[in-house]
Figure 1 (cartoon, rainbow, N blue to C red):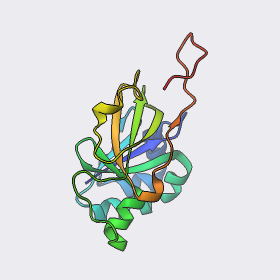
Figure 2: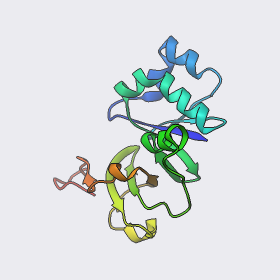
Figure 3: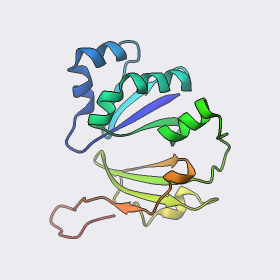
Length: 163
């Protein structure tokens, strides 16, 4: 199980976490890796990942846009869904999960979040991530799926927001 902490705009999350003794101690056995969009942390199981996120909750509230848990390579799920799976046992994950979003990143910044229809694939959403250098499929709880939103990101030399 891996955690991807998506940093807020203007934050170097890796530096922030390692400049604090409290978070440094919490992370001392995990060896977090800096990614363009935040910090990637390998954990042994979902339980240890949830425990670490809880231990870092002050930093997550302040500096993290969203903690994501890696289900399979390239497929992540939200904190709420992770809690539903582990603590509440109200969700059982299966291939082809119905409630999904597509996140598109450019230069480490989240540029769009688009809800995916059940049974669709990432390839069907190529218009939503034009200009993105990375996309992630995010599995979420039913109440977390909402209309897609375009972030306030503008191309250099252009006054139009880009998707």
